[in-house]
Amino acid sequence: MKVLGIDTSGYANAIGVVDGNRILADFTFEARKDSLEKIVANIDFVLREAKLSLEDIQGFGVGLGPGSWTGIRVGVTVGKIFAFSTNKPIWGVPTLEVLAYDARNIPGVICPIINTGAGETVYAAFYRTRDGTVSRTGEYYVGDIQGLAEMVKEPTVFVGAEAQAYRQLISRTLSSSDIRTEAVEGMPRGATVALLAAIHLERGENDNVLSLAPLYLKESTAKAFVNRYSRIAQAKGQV
Amino acid sequence: MLVLGIETSCDETSASLVADGKVMLSNIIATQLDLHQKYGGVVPEIAARRHTELIGYVIEEALDFAGKTLAEIEAVAVTSKQGLIGCLLVGVAAAKSLSYTLRIPLIGVHHIEGHIFANLLSNLQIPMPHICLTVSGGHTMLVYVQDYCQYELLGSTLDDAAGEAFDKIAKFLGLGFPGGPVIDKLATRGNRKAFCFPRPLLRANTLDFSFSGLKTAIINTFKHRIADGEVLPLEDIAASFQEAVVDVLVAKTLRAASQRKALAISVTGGVSANRRLREVFLDTCQQEAIEVFFPELSLCTDNAAMIAAAGYARLKQGKADDLNLDVVPNVPLEVQGGS
Image (cartoon, rainbow over all chains, first blue to last red; front, top):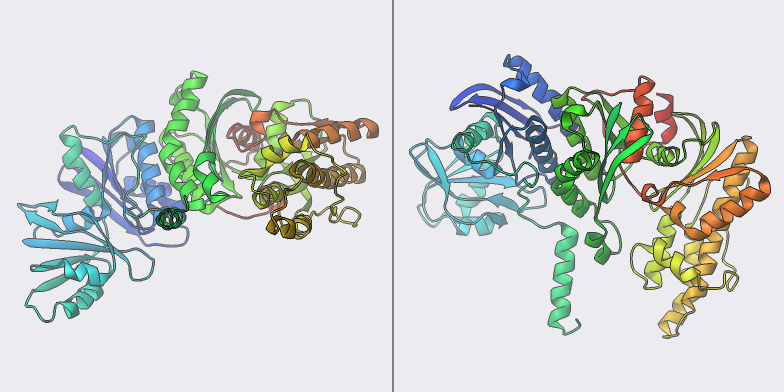
């Protein structure tokens, strides 16, 4: 099954095409100020390079985030509208899983980390690899590196654009123990999104083309503020 | 020619089908008012999230309501200029996707140009050239409409938009958000001459507007009385405030029409739904023997039908865009008209 995969969670346009488990094309256009305005033109470029037309594509994969909120909105919207208007299925893939999947042949625990762009806070999750697949072992993590370090209990490979820097911060915390850590730097790839989507789409699983939504992992700042305010007011008996 | 319009520049997610720039077959508007009310204004991040959730649904609904299929759409028009950047990007991403997958022309429309067309869509007989006052919570502008897609910006607000002044006064008086409808309603029971509030720039030799001084004057007049727990004459304040805004809007628009020897006046945007504004415009324009036009109420606030109508006119003039269409949150209309 030929699947087009895209991820714009870091503004960069990651676009790939696979046929089942075979990669036909994999391009990443670096993040620029106007990246999110270029995604559809870049998809056209990749399809042309791969000598494919839109009619050849049988399904779509899209990186859901977490990452830049504006970035994932554009990626998910493009994925949904492509699927809706071509009447083909779509599968949304968490971007943390995309990063982990590229390390699927490393045995053990994989921890993808994505910068939230807000201070020291990161998005992360732990995955276990087995037979070339990855499965998430707990909840998604949103918090500081210190808190993430406390969750590291066994040898772990950190992946992501800044994996090396994060590994150094974490290994400082772990210095008293002898837990071995490694880092593999990499960005979410369009072909990996497509590979993961193809696995599900080939099984007949698909997401709703109209309701598919980004994976923000954090509520908007305004909402968080109001919720906190109303909790305080409740605590004071002011409601 | 069947054009799909998409509008996501602020807090309405909208899609519409318009035939030949004249016949509105559907105009689906998913308002987010309930989401923003508790914050006392539109929160951009919340609005952008909602657009992403709703965009596919409103497009499907616009097709279903019109009894059309995707294959019948011949062009897609989208608001790409003037608005909240994160919100504009969602609509533009959807429009580019449709343009590419359906192989149809893409047209980017300036939000203000959309409002001008809201009235042209409601009143096909509006003569050219005319003066358009477009006034809402986001903008207050006087535009000389030479012809379709040929504009000259004559004046705009130097600070708050007129609708923004309604919102801020309503918030100050504890009347909630949005302020326009609630002040309009309260004012019908108030005395317009109870208070003489300032009419900023009314006599100045400019077609620009200013509303922040009016807002400050009202707040300074009443803040101590509110602090003292006094019950304020809300109806009279609402009526007197509204009268000050209406006086300025009507006087400046008529001055512009006279200066440019315009054949008619078009009033559009969210504030054009205000009943007192319509009443004073109708009275004054009758005295001055100049025609005045208002859009039907569903086309006053943000909607995609006006974007489809503007997109059709631009396409007819060869002003289609391509997949590299830029999203620009803040750009004057005149640059657009000259392109």
